Length: 64
Image (tube, rainbow, N blue to C red; front, side):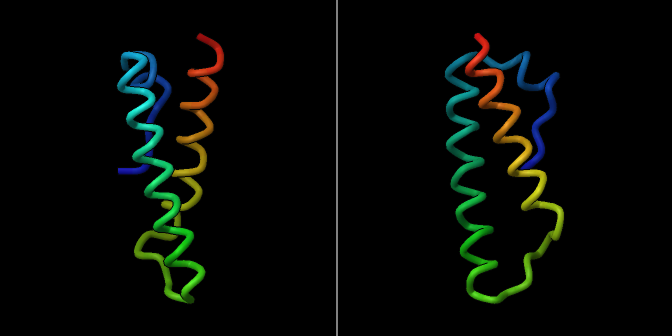
């Protein structure tokens, strides 16, 4: 699941946020590799949702 809402992030602990950030970055790496190989992604919106979720997590990590 690539989408993480602000409400979910607010309820997470600091360690959980960092762990989720690593998971999302690995997922984005896989999506980029799939795109580079010329394959069509299984979910077109997953790339955008993953990038936005990473941005949300980084924002929360930097503000607190």
